[in-house]
Image 1 (cartoon, one colour):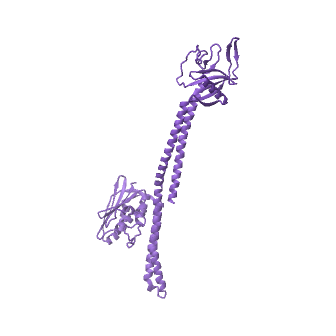
Image 2 (spheres, rainbow, N blue to C red; image 1 turned 135 degrees about the vertical axis):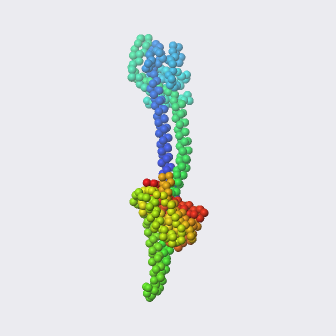
Image 3 (tube, helix red, strand yellow; image 1 turned 120 degrees about the vertical axis):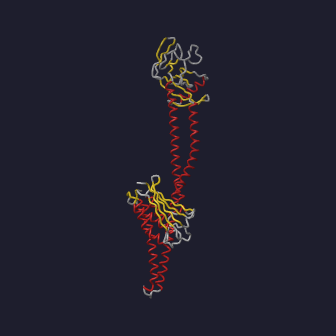
Length: 441
């Protein structure tokens, strides 16, 4: 199940990131291509219009230029050169009638005449306002524009007008470098997409595993909890069942004569009740926010000490406390008191003959720090990370001789974490220490 969940997370992450990356690359490429083509169109639109003057031949005619001031076609002995614009690209223009008869060509390029003719005829026969052609190893963008004005023509008979309705101008612009740049950009984005997809898959796999790890830990803890709870409930149930069998086997005896078996049943019922109450309290501690209020933590610890002091001395243990005054926190007071009692009870149960227990309260960097230390056998270093796990007890035999189910420290941990604090444990050189901190109020 967890593997399927991880694969779903991996798929969702990979697909989401891939779509976003491809969308970003596509957007950048489309915008770049659109800007490049818009620049080509701008240059085509700004190319000057050729005028026909029979006496002077084809000349440049456009905004800011007077007739006869431009550049003539190659070979025109009367041509006068004009300065090239700063953003000049290789280009030429042609004027032709609607029947594709070429009237004139304006060019600064030294191309063969049949190349011009072929390019003009191909552009005209495509019957499109704009398009692209390939010739002379280059890519050319062209645009067809109708000349909606009259041209003045001079011949032997004098000046006469030629209507512009059936006259067209085709502008050609070399866009090889632009298209090459776009092609290179597309190849670069394609390679980058493949590489990034691989990296995204690896990153998604890493984060999917990392995301699933807490769920896996929680799932394993839940399974362990069910197994441990079943074990803890199975033992008293087995004892109860065995004692019931004894009672049934001696049904002719009086209740008073079988009081021992009844007491055994009652003791196991009480143990089960305590276990179930602890489980319910643990669930309540994890889910409920309690009743947070501001209180003096020192006074609360003193009350907990008073409740436990008699039992501690009955076990022959020395007890001391070091409580700083005026330490206030904001939390559920009853729950915090329960956590302190649990830590003291734990220190009492896992102690040694003529041992000792100390409890202290101090302020540390804006935190109230409570520490419970005790002598005893200590906790193995390998078991320290598990001391707050449910049903954990250091002894391998899982003995319940001291009445512990291994839920106390889990309950204390849940209480402190719910209050926004931290709890920790350490053990070395025969000294075990449990401490928790809460933010000062």
